[in-house]
Length: 220
Image (cartoon, rainbow, N blue to C red; front, side, top):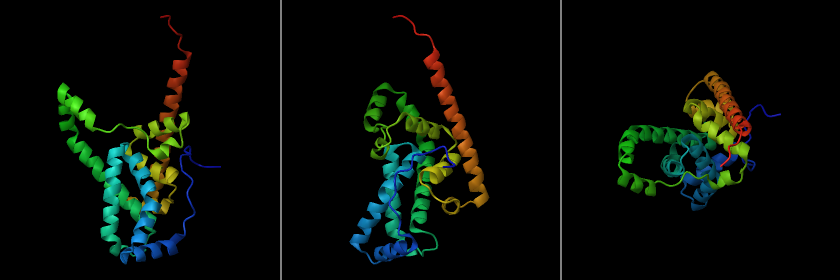
């Protein structure tokens, strides 16, 4: 039985492990176009899914994906295989998501001021893409999935990222520790606290829905 309350992971093809990582990295260093195509086919959607769940914004997640692969292409020469290629790429993804989040908080006050101006607010809303779910999410179109995603958005980002990495991305504790640059004990503690926070959010959502269903209707 799964230990997590989450079940949002897509089916993943079997990975060919360290040998495949080393082969792909070597081909990338050699400038193989086929290797670049394989890299994108293998990691583009997982990187987008991770970034989207950390940021909850499709446009920002798309920007992160571009930055991640630019950094991978530019820095593949520094990859020495001390971790898996996936772990290295996810570490870059988490760092870029952190950068995007910091940018958002720095600019949020200015954007709020713009939004208070009616005409400019309309223009701003025309530019911002809708927050619709990604094609990946469409495959999991269920009420339970929507509730879990909404609950994830409400918990502390520090806890959210470890829950996403462990329970959705399905990384090991050791990989998560390496990606985040924290100890194994810290990872386990954050996962426990994150899962507990998520359970509380879900319990609150279920209670609210139950209360709404029991509320008496009013005549029009």
